[in-house]
Length: 384
Length: 90
Image 1 (cartoon, rainbow over the protein chains, first blue to last red):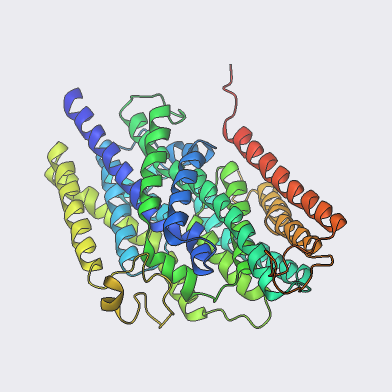
Image 2 (cartoon, one colour; image 1 turned 180 degrees about the vertical axis):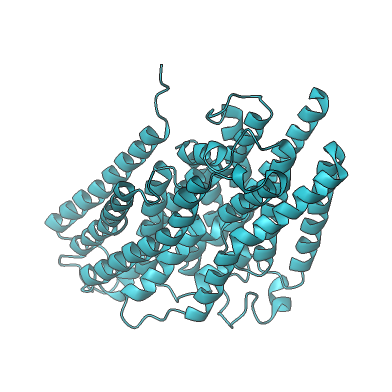
C-alpha cells in the first residue's frame, strides 16, 4: 500500500519537525540563560540571535544525524509506525519536563522514545546496544563532567587574569565576551540537536525505502529541521531559562562566559565525533563548573540533584511512553493506529500548554529573584 | 569494538580545555592589557568604567589577543564542518 505509506511518512516528518520545535523551545536556555541572567543581552534579542545561529548550525555537520539514522536501531526491523510511536514518547516527555521547568535532555527523550517503540515492536535484538551505550549513554555520563572541568578551569583563569580590573570594567568586558560565547553555544546547539531530528527523519526515509540505508540526510531535511529548531528557539522556553539562569548558581558575567565557552567547545567537539550528547547535560555541567571554579560561589546542589534525577529517568520514561504508543498503534493497526497516536499526542500537548498558562514564565519575569520554585512568587504582577 | 573510544575522549578533554578555557583566558588577557594606561579610574569621560586604559601598547596587545580568539574560533568551526561532511567515497 504505497499511498498509505506515503501518508504515514508525511505524518512522521511533521511530527519529527514538531519535536524539533519543542527541542529548540526547550533548549534556548542552554545558550542564552546565563546571558539573560547577567543582562548581557535583553531576553528578546537573545532568543532572536540564538534562533538564527541554530539554523546556521544545522548545516555545520552531519555526523550526529548519521548516528541516529543508522547507529542505534536495526533499520531493517523498524517500521514507520515505530518511528511515529517513538516520536510521541519523546515529545510527551519533553513537554512534561518543560512544564516542571526541568532542563532534561531532548535528545534522550527522542532516543528513548524510538528505542522503547523498537523494543515493543521487534524485541531487544532490534536495538544496536553497542551503539546506544558507546554513542549515547557513556557520553551522557562523561560530557557534563568534562564540561564542568573545562568551565571550572576557565572560571578560575578568568578571575585570576582579570583580578586587577575594576568591578565595572570586568563586568563590561566579559559581558561582551559572553555574547560571543553564547552565540557559539547556539551554533553548537543547531549542530548537535537539529541533527537528531534529521537523523530520525532520515531513519523514516530509510525505513520507507525512500533513500538507501546509511544515507546522509537530504538537503530538504536539513533545511526544514534547521528552520523548526530555530523557530522553537526564537519562541523561547522561558521556564527552563529561569531554572538554569537563576536557580542553579548566581552567575556573574565572567562565569557566564566560562560556562558558555566550555559548553560550546565540548558540544562542537563531541558532535564532530558523532556523539549524540545532550546539550542540556553539558550546559548544566558547565554552570555547575563555574560555581566550583570561583571561591565563595554557591551551587544549589538540591536543584542540581533534581535535574540529575530527571536525567536518569529520561531515557527509560520516554522509552515507556514510546513502547506504549507503539503497542496502541499496533493494537489498532495500520495508519489508523498511527493517526490515533498522534491525535492523543496533540491532546496531551494542548493540555500541558493550557496548564502552563496558570503560572506563566515569560520574558517579563524570567529574571525575578529565585524563590525556590520555577515560577516567580507573584505571577499576577508579571502577567501584564 | 570497545565501549569507550579513548582517542576521542582525550581529544575532547584536551581540545575542550584549550578551546573552552584557553580561549576565554586569552580574551581575559586582552581585557587586562586593554585596561592598562593613564585613563585608569579617571572620573568622567565617555568610557568611565575603566575598560579602556588608553595605553597604545596595551591596546595593541589586546587587539592581538582578540584576533587570536576570533581566528581560533573560525578555524575550529571550519574543522568541525570538514569532519562533519566527509567527501563521498567513490
